Length: 375
Image (cartoon, rainbow, N blue to C red; front, side, top):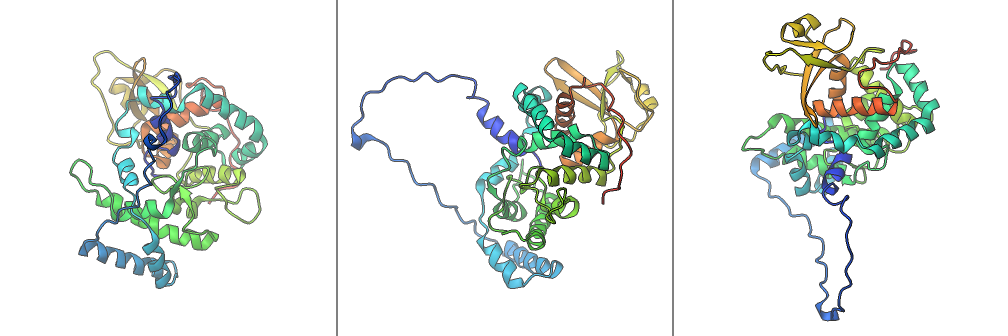
């Protein structure tokens, strides 16, 4: 959570330019053996020299992490010394798709016929387990599965980056983007690195072998270490919180995450809206649902169908067919706690509706109130 581009999108973006063009194979004349190029060995990671200030930060991190999580200081120091700086992670963090793409470009990454068919098949195969979780937590099964679909393609791509290396790189070498350092993001990843040490201790993980996204997220639902510690659940009752291998654990953990941020059972996420002619554009300062329907109407925006009189916000996107206006509810904001991008939230919403075979404007089917509050 609080990640930038979902992991599966990285692969999709890189391959999109070549996957639709057939390659015509032309016979080649024999090449003398001496002329055959020999692939260069993979370059070794280039060490980044530490400044005096950075060395002080690392020592402070070691002391703080050892004290906070009751770990031997020597263990933290020795483990941190094995972490490697990764330039590729810095490059990926410098240009997430959310900051460079319009909705017309972003949507096709996730809303494909193949992805939708796969999601429906996954629901059919796991209906009993995911509907049991939905009844317990009050989060629709299609929302749970859409998160997994957007994040990892239901486990097909959970990430190949070493999590320790990723968080080490982002904690101590967070990129300066457009000439602007971002101490808040560096602090965020420093805390996540510390949380990783605690998570490995609590769950018995080998901290050196954990794999995940370039941002350090892990498992079927791509949980950051702090979210794993706080929200992961043992959904299959085997005494472990295994988000790498257990679908039931992943279902329960994603639902628990949403409940933790105030998911409203049976309430809508988005509905399409219309803009009155002559109304000026309106972009809220954030995605918190804090306006009344009357306030949005006064600004020229009304829902295209009857909706409950709940706090709302407005999202405007540039889609393939032109400008789209959407009224978002509290559940929209909750999805943005998983990933701050509003386009990410819209992708999850629309994929969930496709999995459930519902039109995008259909209100969610009423679910019973959660059987037990999730903590």
